[in-house]
Figure 1 (tube, rainbow, N blue to C red):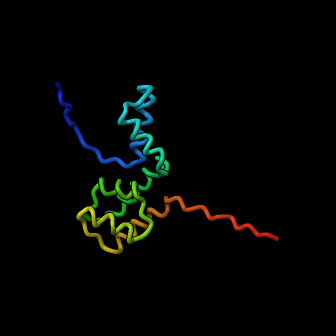
Figure 2: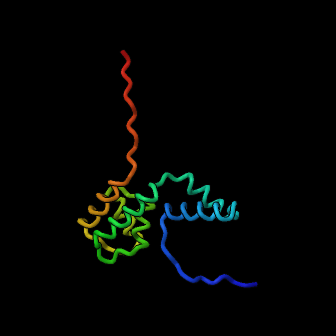
Figure 3: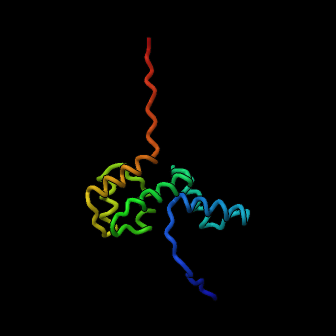
Length: 126
């Protein structure tokens, strides 16, 4: 039995994976079992639009944060932490230390793209 060989590893975020699965489904008419389960899971997750994800990635890269790898940027796009505490939690799992100023820069950029919770309309009973 032939074992598949890994040619290249490329970090992706959830938005990019969703887009790739759409293209595969268009090409092959249907997804295999694992790809279908992945697509179902990703469809249940609310994500930003592909164009927004690309812009967000570029803006985070433009911050020039020391030792910030592309894989880390994708993690931020996946999780979209809106607070400094949330961003620090991600960094703590990545074995990288970042200044408070850089953490604030990241969350500021992410907040530009994050979907804000819709405010409930106040109904006035008169």
